[in-house]
Length: 116
Image (cartoon, rainbow, N blue to C red; front, side, top):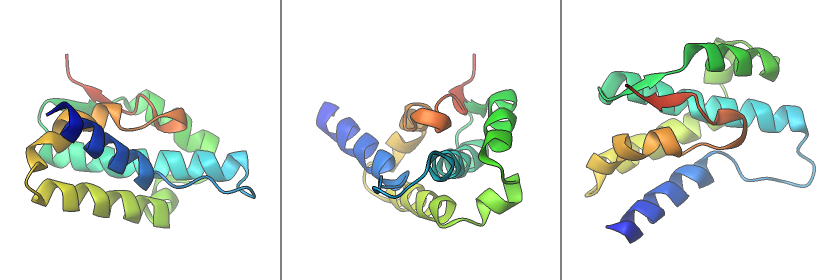
């Protein structure tokens, strides 16, 4: 099970966007926040034990320089949404909700949280 957890976490992390040499910090912020938003939207709809730190999300959206709607229209959001939905349909789909709060680093960290 530990290997499966690592594999799922790795897939989620990969979907947050690969770093390219010409990517700016602003691009990284936007990609990471958009990916975390896709996970947050899924968590709110499908994971009753997870929530969203709305204050942290609002801070990161502001830092991104885009609106929530603009971030949801990005390729990074769509890619993350597709990865999460595909994984949820798979054999280990039950693990998605267990991992979403730990799936994002950087600017996306702390947006999806476990409810207390």
